[in-house]
Each structure stands twice: as C-alpha cells, then as structure tokens.
Image (cartoon, rainbow, N blue to C red; front, side, top):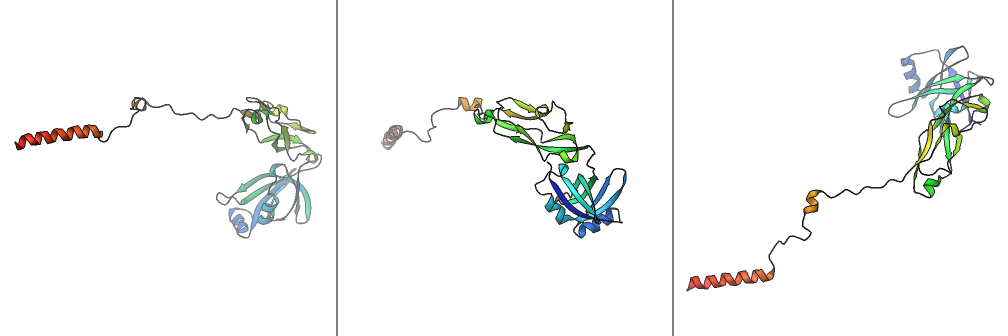
Length: 229
C-alpha cells in the first residue's frame, strides 16, 4: 500500500512570476491543483512543511490528503520544480483523484537478495530500471515493487515481465531490462613499449671499476716519468 501524507494549502488569487517570487520570499511554495474537469486552482503552502513531508518518500506514488481552505481532497503530485542551485521546491502540481478512478503512476523498483553471480563469482549487480509505470486504483497503489534477484548468475537479467503487481496493470514494456549481473572488472596491465623492451637490464656504470682506474693511473705516471727524463 502506498504511503499517505497530509498537507494544508491556501488558495491564492495572484498569479504570475512576480507573485510567485513574493511567495517564495515569504517561505511559501506556489502550487496548482487540477483534475476532473475542475478549473486549475492556484495554491500556496509552507515550503518547510512540504520539504519535511517528502523526505524519504516516492513523491510520484504517494497519496496526498490535501486540505485547501478547510476542504479536503485526495491528490497525487504530478510535478515538482526545484531551483537550480539550492534544489529547493519552487512549484508543485497536484492532481485530484477519486477512489473509483484508475490512475497512472510510477512506482520504484526495489531489488531483494544477493545474486548468485555476485555471491559466488564476484560479479556486479547493475540496476538499469528504477521505476515502472502502472495503472491502478488509488487504494491499490503499492509503495514499491520488489523483485527477487537471488538466482541471477553472471550474464543473466530480469525484465519488467518478471514483475507481478496485484490489482494493477503494468504499462512499461515487458521486454525492458530491470537489472543484470555483469562479470567482475579485470584491471588490464599495460604492455611494455618497444623502447622499454630494448632497454638494458643492467644498470649503467657512472664511473669505471677500480681496477681500470688503477691501470689508467699507472700509465699516466709512466708517461710522466718519461717526460721528466
């Protein structure tokens, strides 16, 4: 079952970028509520409240009990816009839902277990897809979808068709890969260059051996003696 949150909002008569900037300067987030043929309604709500409420939850699949000017309604968040630098919430779109209406949502995919190829062969589990799109009644929205990866060996994958969700229709293509176990990475040792291969294996002598120095010295002395004579 999906998580549920409660938020409080107020209607706002002013619209436009200037009005939105003034709201943000007061610690409020501009928002809009739409759905079911109703006219889009401009709202504002506390940034601190919404930021705190959304910590650790999947916003796209979380039911929001939104109270607007004292009137409650059930909604889903359809879009969150954030500032470029601080990543603060800048705008939110709420979509009103009804209990008997099928809706389209994205739910996170959670992998369960340690694959055989990771445990016994040193492979690496690579999760390619982290969310899938489903059609479901609000009461049956799952908090997340779990997929058991324990039996995966090296080179094996799981796909969307391997996922089962009660009371929901999966809209994501069944052939889409969710995860795979890849072989362990092997660090390649660079081959020696031709110059390195031809280089001498013995150290180069910086000075001559003592014996050669002695012989050379004696010759110089002898030559010097002849010159003196």
